[in-house]
Structures are given as structure tokens and as C-alpha cells.
Image 1: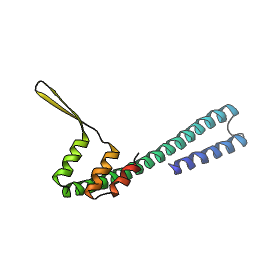
Image 2 (image 1 turned 90 degrees about the horizontal axis):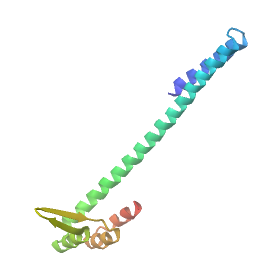
Image 3 (image 1 turned 60 degrees about the horizontal axis):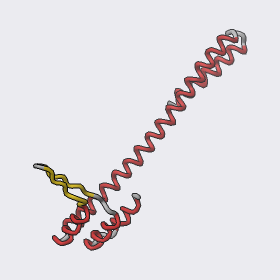
Image 4 (image 1 turned 45 degrees about the vertical axis):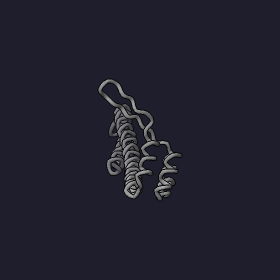
Length: 135
């Protein structure tokens, strides 16, 4: 993209030189110059959008890696948790159970301050710092 932008700018210079040497008339020069400037502007805008997209992709990749590390640590803590600790976690996460006819709907929440207590009792306090960092 940068090479194409440079190429378009060089075309602008050559166009200006052609006009100054009276090779092309003013109207032709203005029309072509306007076209080239619009193309340069469009390319610069596209380059900025691509740069922004790449930065967002880097941020999302970092977030995904952090979430995966978080998930792995939680899994490790849950593997070591006693039945009572797991029971406390389930009670913390389930908001309500809705039973209608033949269906059962379980609604859950993620209370951050409550997780501190359960996870701390499981022995993975480092997760709490990670959770607070995502607020």
C-alpha cells in the first residue's frame, strides 16, 4: 500500500511537471490532479483502517490468550476443589431455576466479589487479580 501511495504521489509530480511545461491544459491538469488526490486520500484512509484492524486483532488475540490462561487456572482450581467448595460455587453461580411444564431453565450469574471467596478457598487467589483486571 505504501508503495502504491508513493507511486500515486510520483504521478502527481509528473502531472504537475507536464502542466508547467504546457503539455496539458489547465482543465485537464485540474481534473487529473483531483482524481489522483482522491485516490491518494482513499489509499491513506484504507491503510489507516487496516492498521486499526491489525491493532484490534492483536488486542483480541491477547484477550483470548488471557481468557484461556484464566480458564486453565480455574479448571486447575476446580479439579482440586472439594465437594463443599464446588457446591458453594454452584450456589454462587445459579441465580434461579425456572420450571415451566416440561422444561427447566437455569439462569446463572457471575458475581465477581463472590468468586473471590470461593476461588480463594480453592487456593487460586491469582485469578482474582486477573478477574479484576477485566472490569
